[in-house]
Length: 113
Image 1 (cartoon, one colour):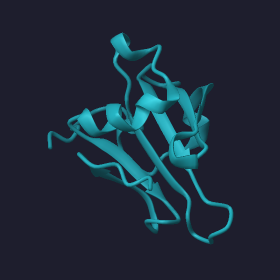
Image 2 (cartoon, one colour; image 1 turned 90 degrees about the vertical axis):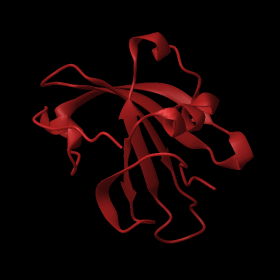
Image 3 (cartoon, helix red, strand yellow; image 1 turned 30 degrees about the horizontal axis):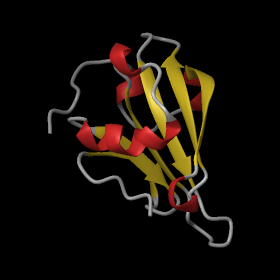
Image 4 (cartoon, one colour; image 1 turned 180 degrees about the vertical axis):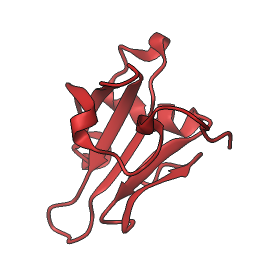
C-alpha cells in the first residue's frame, strides 16, 4: 500500500467536513444498504474524493464511511459501482462508529455488509 507523504491535509485523517465542497451523487441500494454516495472536493488542493456512507438505523454504532481519490475518468461513477471502485484503489480511508475510528488507511475489501 503506497500511502501519501507530504501532501494536503485531505489525504490524512481525521477528516473535517469544512475542508470540502460536496455534491450528492445518489444512493446505493445494493443489498438494501441505502448508502449515501457523494463527491467531495478539497477546498485546499482540489482533490476529488468519492465518499460512501452507510449505517443501519436498527443498530447502534453501525456507521461506516469510506473515501478514496476519484480519478478524472470516473467522475460519472454510479452509486452501485463505488464499492468495487474503492476496492481497486491502492488505498482508501475508512472510519465510523462501527470501526471506532475517525479514519485509517486500508486497501482491498470494503466492509459494507
